Image (cartoon, rainbow, N blue to C red; front, top):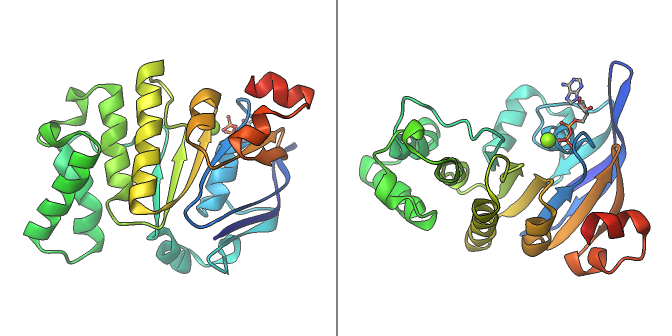
Length: 238
Ligand SMILES: Nc1ncnc2c1ncn2[C@@H]1O[C@H](COP(=O)(O)OP(=O)(O)O)[C@@H](O)[C@H]1O
Ligand SMILES: [Mg+2]
């Protein structure tokens, strides 16, 4: 589904990605974990075509997106949903309008169909009672739920999440990660999450890749990584 091949990226004198190599299978939930500054967000930005690599490639459904024109990239991106740090909801729109926005912008769905679809997804994320509220009236956890609903409203085949638990307390962190898991399974989307939240990543991931200073130093199932004898992995996962 997604292949990241020998990805290199340097900003000025700082090489942030040192030949990153890994694959994601269709329908898989893959979590990229690593210390702050290890290159997780930069890697995600390459996977959605916001940054272009110095060398290497990102192949999604047989297309090398690192070399596509902006126009073709826009088409590929329509099949991707993103939940980014900050949530980025529109302050001047209600929860309902925020979630409906991509449908109104990119489809010709009828009013009633939009309403049904948005209400269904809001129910799924537990926000059906909050559809008329504005983002400023929501808690941090509810804002993330609304952003998640908007990220998946287009039935994208791939969902990208960057630090979905940032700014949330442990209980809300657990609950948003569980919700991502539930939604990914229900909608059968391939899901890529960058997170420093090890505990929850180990709980919901099918596979984890560990990035350190711009290189993947380990990958495997949560059980495989937890039971590794490697000192850095032990410190990281236990
Ligand atoms: N657009 C950019 N220009 C220059 N340096 C950047 C840029 N984006 C990220 N960096 C640097 O790349 C490194 C990795 O950043 P990032 O991918 O955000 O780490 P994290 O793993 O915490 O998400 C950091 O040292 C950061 O300062
Ligand atoms: Mg980051």
